[in-house]
Amino acid sequence: MTALLPSELLDIGASCGALLKERGETVSTGEGSCGGLMTAALLAVPGASAYFIGGSVIYTKGALDGLLTGEVERPKKLRGASEPWALHLARSSRAHMGSVWGLGEGGATGPQGNPYGDPSGHAWVAVSGPTEGAENLLTGSDDRVANMVAFAVGGLELFHRHLSA
Image 1: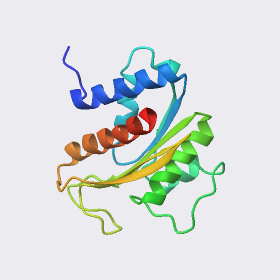
Image 2: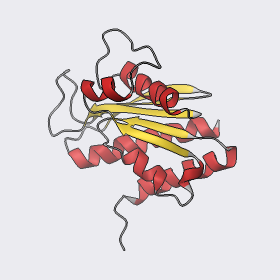
Image 3: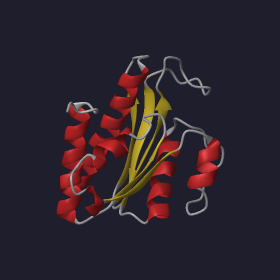
């Protein structure tokens, strides 16, 4: 059977999974425009139940209100596809699911930009845990699926750097 996920995404998911197992730590996700691809890459690893707690795709304010509200104070004037948004998703998923690490992502996949004026191919990814950080990704592309994969890979690469530090 041919893999449904690109090898680059599977490889970084497997590498993060191996580090999590080695460290005895757990992770949860709060994704947006990459639509759960970080979660899929982490779960594609045999034995993922040793480190993966759960995940959510937070695509609208309604999803945020329903799934990741309360445990972590929401910044005032929070808008999607921003550094505070990605950090809030990472912190909230970690707090709500009781994991050591939380991953967050929000962006504009395309083919058009988002309502905030961000262009297609723009995203923020974030990690919250023993260390914390966020990164802006700009692909320069309006290819929706390619951007979803790029955002997921970028988020897991950021996570891998934090796990390896």
